[in-house]
Image 1 (cartoon, rainbow, N blue to C red):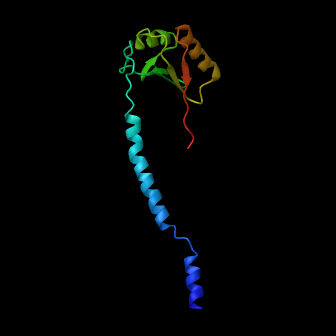
Image 2 (image 1 turned 30 degrees about the vertical axis):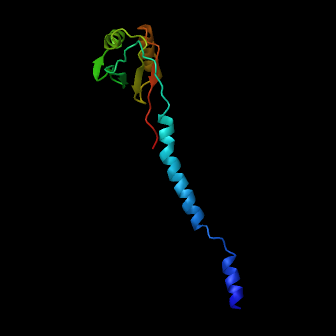
Image 3 (image 1 turned 60 degrees about the vertical axis):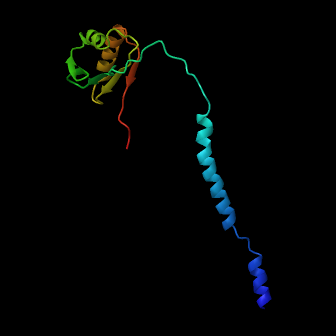
Length: 131
């Protein structure tokens, strides 16, 4: 009876040493992998265009009563001129629209038309992310 119990215990596989070896290999791989990628020497090309880090986004806040460009109130007639002065004539600037949901569609289309007539064709409509 005792010999039968010893045989039963010997027939089970002990996986602890296997797990230890695998963890050591994983740690070695994690340490060596960044060294391999950083050993590749690259000489990246330089850009001829300077990056404008001071460029602020142009944001239009539109509600039922008023239009604001970066917190500055403006009329529909002078909207294009104000955006042009804020972007310093850069017609490739993206104009972000934050529109109240109560604003009628006709008013929004009129504002988009005024921005496009001023020469700004990159428009982004912003929304609140659902929670």
